[in-house]
Length: 192
Image 1 (cartoon, rainbow, N blue to C red):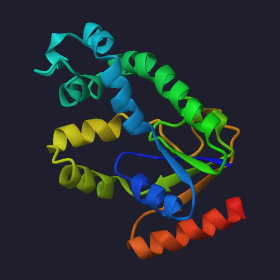
Image 2: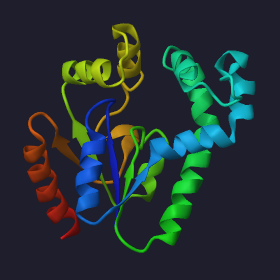
Image 3: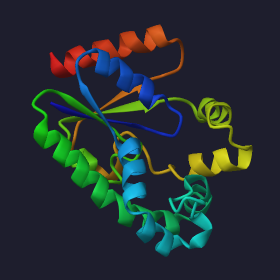
Image 4: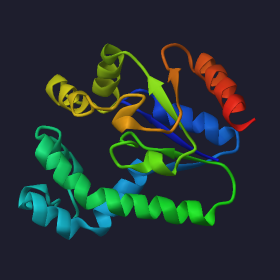
């Protein structure tokens, strides 16, 4: 079984992924693959967005790139057009080599079209104010930048893009222990 794991910025997808990994699933981290893809395709991304995103070592300065794409939906779409096909191809390669259950941890699962290779999707829910506080604390972002990232995912919803894949919501407000219980209950329901 392939599960998609999604939710808005700072909802706690990684915590849910760790719980599912402890329950025997291979976790495929789309953000980590994105970093790999950016590294391997730095020249193309820099050509598309300008020398201002080039780090001193020639790689992509992800923070500088983030300021550009989170502020401008057209530029975000342009970046997605470059990296999403490469991310999807790598995830498919991983799944082709894996025989057990897997979880694709991808904040933009539906936008990238990854939901189409999933048997079910888990959507992690948290109120926006909690996500904002988490973003500012975890990523040490100023309020304006944290809000820009949150706004950039306005279209991320449990049943985004007319998905025909069953989607199950998990609330992540409370203790890690209560989240573990909710995820375990859902996992038993989905994977038996």
